[in-house]
Amino acid sequence: RHYIFRMTKTGTALQVAAQLAGQPGVKHVEPVLKRQLSKRLVPNDPLFSQQWTLLNTGQNGATAGADINVTNVWDSYRGSGIVVGVIDDGFQYLHPDLAANAVTNIHYDYRDNDSDPKPEGTGANADSHGTACAGVIAARGNNGIGLAGVAFEASLVGLRLIGGTAGDTQEGAALSHSNSVIHIYNNSWGPNDDGKTKGGAGTLALAALKNGVNSGRDGRGNIYVWAAGNGGLNKDNAGYDSYNGSIYTISVGALNDLGQKADYSERGACLVVTAPSGAESGQNGRPQGTTTTDVAGEDGYNNSTKTVGPVGPDELADRNYTQNFNGTSSAAPVVSGVVALMLQANPNLGWRDVQEILIRSATQTDPTNSEWRTNKAGFKFNPNFGAGRVNAGAAVALATNWANLPTMTSTASEQASLSVAIPDNDSNGITRSFDLSASNLRVEQAVVTVDITHPFRGDLVINLISPSGTVSPLAELHDDNNADYQAMTFRSTFNWGEDSKGVWQVQISDRRANNTGSLTRAKLEVFGTTPSTPTMLAKTLGSGQFIFGVTGTPALAYTLQVNTNATATNWTTLFSTNAPASVFDLIDSSASGPRRFYR
Image (cartoon, rainbow, N blue to C red; front, side, top):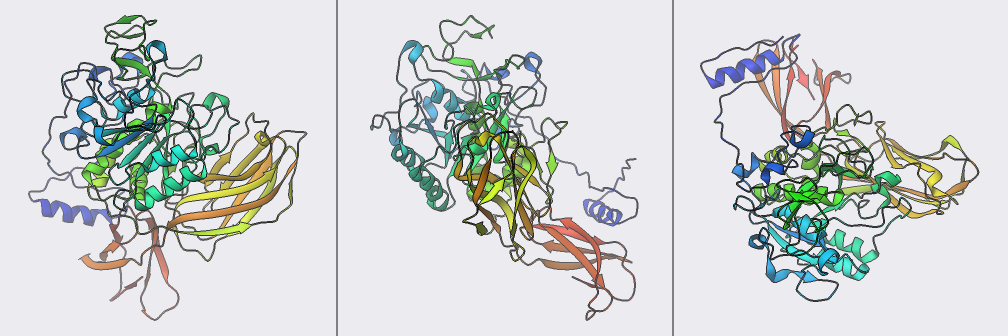
């Protein structure tokens, strides 16, 4: 049952709400305060009505509301002052819907070694991928033409890298390019999505990522957004890709217009969030894709072989735009745009703050999916979705008053020089335990590195189990007939907010017959922060009730204990709760006796 109490004064309402919260049988109390309502900005761009990724009204059979909740943000933030580097096959910076946001003085072409990143090729061979990504991020909105990007007043820098041959040197340079000026790097590229290619990132690229988060953006850290990959139908996993496997990147999966995992999108315990993209490639997939900019004057995605009309049937009549962009390549720039809005709202966010805000604010998409799990800290994760669908409105709201996370630290345990046989075709496999009982971290991410000899590594399933029982699927059964995992690193975001203390387990099993292998090395490294000692401010609410204002660490579990004697050794636990914010309240509604002592 729901009850509404009307008060004449705001202060009275808050006081009564606090008193009611401690009463038996009361599940939830909140003050309902009057607030000024305002209209949401709806851009005047003629194609905006098709941009279901930004405002899903049920276009073409889509699920209304399965969007990124961004239109209310635009009244206050549109990405102004934030610079996004688009590492891609170039982008058409003179496109009529991109030119106003292009920062021409720091573009660079790492394939031709010049300062002009315009896409190459003509006709059907024109490079069009980067132009489409740039439009998703920051096509100039509310200008009466075309469409609107997520952060439609953000600045764009073209960094031409992919589409031809590029080595580790070029990758490292692109990922470091002007990192004091560029805030966010969008990366809609990676290794082959065949389910058999592992790793991918070279030494210099990985070093650039680490340098970027430590030194870029005036020490607050560059934000690296990465497409999870499109090998879902090949049973590829984003975690097999060392770009997505880096703790320094935001791994992004893709959704269709129903809010479900796009069939091509790769799973993985490394996923942070997912974003709308669409245009599934499977036989029964949803066909509706993303509307964005296309190379003007060339046959890009919207080419001369397509039947056009006002909105189709195949493509748009205006060939400067396309309605068929898709893949995690389209999902990643959605998140880059959301991060631009967050950084405009709070430029002081660190790179880890951005990750946590995205996790905290994500919407649990496709909630009936059976793989949703809640970790010990109360965060929901799913190998198909990460923490869920990116939610711009919620993310910006959190960012506005966010207290930055403390300095990151880590603890590690390694088992080397092993020779542990992995039983053939045995789901029980082997388990290696890592005792981190001496540690005291609020976990953010966990990384497992293994050396395994096996002639058919696709037979192997690898899981990480935290002391709280959270299972992170690191490697899954798939068709990879290549041999061995050598110095293979897997990353999990699924333990975010949990306590590191206790025994962690790495389970490895062989799920197909006729091939055997052995584990020769395993290492676990857990990254997070040392929890701060909480402070408590006690306030009397009334007879038999006390409220405590606590300053602590968000999502960490806190236990309130009580005793009638300050020197006693036996304390009674009243309850434990996960801190919802850095400042929160604990209430003892059963106080009795002349005095009580708390800790």
